[in-house]
Length: 124
Length: 208
Image (cartoon, rainbow over all chains, first blue to last red; front, side, top):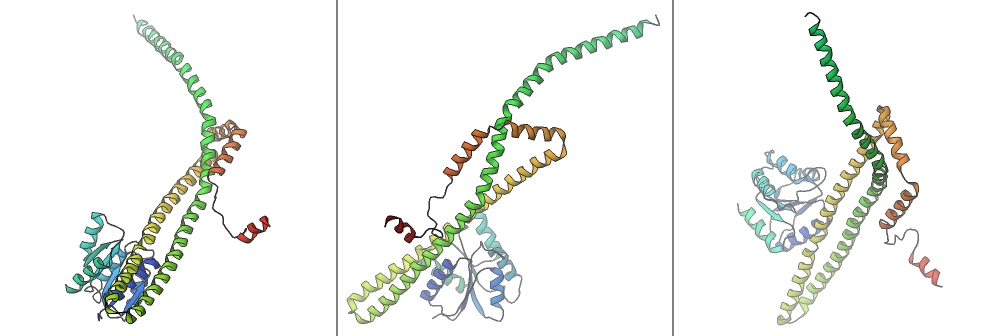
């Protein structure tokens, strides 16, 4: 079991379920799921989050805006964030790196890829 | 001598007028050709306008279909996931009751089930592609709407515009327009049965 509480954010119910399955398999027991950045910010209040997985393309507040909000907040700025997205363009990845994300996974991904990125992000 | 200059100027003016009339002689046939061209083009313009109207009318429907596809694939994907989770739970129980050498086979089956779950990411990926196509359709629809509004403005703002729009309508061949519309409707007709109005029972009843 991994002690960190993980928050995953994706507007697709299918993706949320897949991510949840893989996180369980990796060993996470405490998980919070959200549909978009705004929903995530609301659900994060009062929670001790150790890792965030976020999609990029989402309604209300997209992944980029969400990461910007987190990095501008002293309470959340040090939480490792992994982007999980269909956006695989070089400039997208560079934008994410500049924003300070700890990892970037392009869909479709395998359980091993996700596990590797999570281990790397938590080790930083 | 004092009269020479004005006379010279008069001759110059006459020469200029002759040049102008010569240009007029050359321009008038061109203008005639231009008007003939516009006249010929009117039916085509009319057809284009009609096509815009018909095509843009179908766009909201097409957009809705794309959204329906996303919804349907999402539902189907979750049904598959339910089954996979059920299989996985069953395999976990089996694993406790089989000899050690068989456990490896059960473990491989569980991994296969997990691989299938991950392969279902295609649903999200295709949904995003459909959503992108949907946004393009909406943008085209907005352009069509703008074009239509602009043509209305021409009508309202100038008499020439009003006349041209009137000619456009006159230029349309009603028979051809009707045939084109029928063809367009046939080509864009939804051939997938929507079961809200006519169920399988209704169909079966026709064969009884």
